[in-house]
Image 1 (spheres, each protein chain N blue to C red):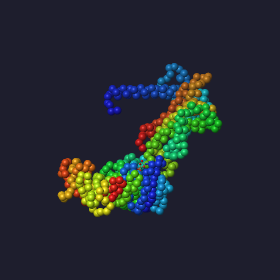
Image 2: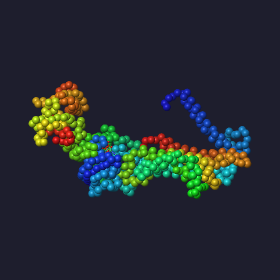
Image 3: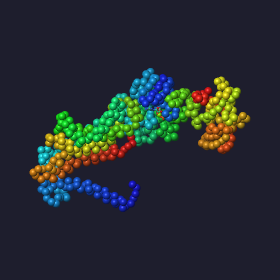
Image 4: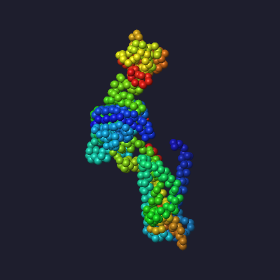
Length: 358
Length: 282
Ligand SMILES: Nc1ncnc2c1ncn2[C@@H]1O[C@H](COP(=O)(O)OP(=O)(O)OP(=O)(O)O)[C@@H](O)[C@H]1O
Ligand SMILES: [Mg+2]
């Protein structure tokens, strides 16, 4: 176990492409940090720099007390789980897990002991230990990959989208297991995913990356409640947040939608009247109301999901498509009006140019 | 094919049987001829059924030699051929594994230059460069020994390309996993790459063994010392008896013996061989 400190890290690939524009984060001992972002944003690049598979162009990476910039992966005391598992196809499951330990020159008895323990934790039977990886199911291979990481007893676990090759159900199950395992072993972990549900449920803290820049770093709840930018707001939460162009009202305490709808804002400060903004509202925050000064949504489409209902519609003349999430099943039909209100605390305003939160 | 038409089945069987006969009949004749004595082989019609001298002939061939290559026994020739074929196939595999490893996994200066140099050797088989190669081998004092027989045939680009192709199909993540496990370049090569290319190595071994075994022109050129004669080139010499008529029964025995090692290699490595040529998934 160790803390990880990433300071001003940048990455320029040999072809001149700048994949990481400077990342800073201190990861505490035993913390679970998730790197999340859309495809190509540099998550894997950052993780691979921590692993030592990719050279660091600028900045320092510290694991425990050591600066590891120039150390080989094997000397960094890390273990990594790959997206495609990267199991050695010609070795038995046992040997897959034992290989790294053998290279370290560990005694046979201790290797057997460690592999046995890991197999127990991961519920791999001793018969399965003798099989080749291609004789295992996807989920079992995933466990073996985890096992290979566990037996090393590293200071840091690195995961690069370890669940993306599993089917939806197994993914949920393994997600829970990874979470439990990390809590039980208390090993500092960095986890890469583009799945925001995985990110929200697994991480103590999330780092949202966008084109090599850190958009926001915070706990899942912070990201959900106070997204620092329109990008984060759109990325975190499912279905994603509704955005519309709007304007601050004359009094500075309301926000005016193009359809003539006006919503009250809470608090004050920095909101010059007439300023153009992007308004963000999460689907689950457009609540049904019977009040008087309400906005009415014209329903275009209703999706019944069982536990929830998704309603797609628009306000008045405004063309922007809005999504609403209602609990349970709803009786609304396309063409109906859905009167709704939003708690002012759940309105998010963003600058139309920079995308930053106002 | 899932078609089930009796006539078609019959027809395809006929074709196959015909094919087998075409291949098997000369071999049968060889066997029959090798089991008669010299006198019977000079009378017409030639026998179609085996005679009773098979083991006498076998013993004589293995210990004494045949016709105008009397000085060296077929047993010695077999050993020479075996040594040459093994040295060629093992040497080729070792060298091409290493060079493919270098080309695929290392970034060294002039990497592509070396790659193309290896590529160009494809256009220069031994037959094309036979005189200069002979000169080099002679200058190096490798005439009349196993080194001279095998080394010039070891260098080849085909095997290097085959292994390059194999290595390119091995996912990078495996190399990365090995690096994290602490495997250095040599360990990665020995523990991961070579075992993973196992079937391809077997396939190449079979092909190269037969290639080496069947060499004719090169051994003919490089061996003046009869102790170094290989079996395939000697068969030709045996038929060139100047005074007496060729000893056909012994020549056929030699031919039979020359066929056995390649057959043994193919049969024992058949499974791996087929896998190595067809398997694509890693
Ligand atoms: N070896 C390389 N040379 C040049 N550019 C690269 C290299 N590897 C990755 N990139 C670029 O760097 C950027 C970040 O890549 P990275 O693999 O880190 O993305 P990612 O966030 O992991 O995406 P994904 O979710 O699809 O795995 C991409 O634009 C990619 O094209
Ligand atoms: Mg990635």
